[in-house]
Image: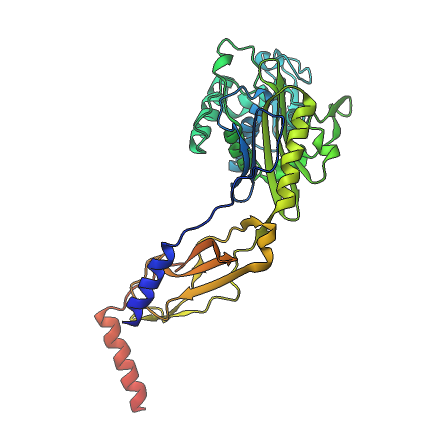
Length: 383
């Protein structure tokens, strides 16, 4: 009966509503399409027209850089690689470092040139280095976008230039850009490049200056990418981190460079002023639970998810955490089987309900195991 009551309590807890952080309405930005997202949780804190399909210009390179970083992490390409510029790469217009056909540049300098100076020639060379051709790389871009749930995105090139015959089909949204920006930021090494203000390549012979002015003028900036064409207007995917919170602000189709930076700063300021992260760790170490008829006598429960929770700053002082655990559990136990719940609340509002689970399976004792166990006890009792 006790186990049945506990099970019913767990079911009831799972049915309680979880209140997400509400999208903010207290700020106005000049950007016609904008979104503010928490990088850790993906929570949207503000949005305006965030799902309109628009040209992203060079903000496209967030996806280009993501695929390069993933290829590096997977070992398909190497940090020590020299990247060779093809005729096609050297022929790219717009922002560039003026690669010559056949010129070799290190992976480090290629990435630096793309991130800091938005070099289209280097972006194309990297795309070819990863996939063999820009066309093959674009297929990978679209496949990765689909995997990430970027449902309103279609890429036709790796640069965002609008000089392709089908450039009108190169479209994405502020929301989708925030999604891929969040994924790129999981590669911490990219910040070695996105936080550079000024640098050089080619042995100091060619200077680079970051197109993202927030790197110099906004505290905590961690990236990420600017973009501009006459068709796309002024675009920006900006990221910044303060007090353990990293936020992503995306703006598209701004009338001026000033508008895009002021829009991003207004959103970031709002986020840092009004939100905080709360640890999902339980208030004390989770106690072991006795296992009945199991090949292990106890199981050490763990949290299913330990990511921090984003809350309004005003709720921080009222946060409470309550752990509910089964007093005992009968084998067999499956890996991931729920054993309890961590309930996190503030002012009576449920912030999160995190399942507490078994980290591994525990088999039930067989009849032979039980017989042997009984015999051992009898032998010990007779000694």
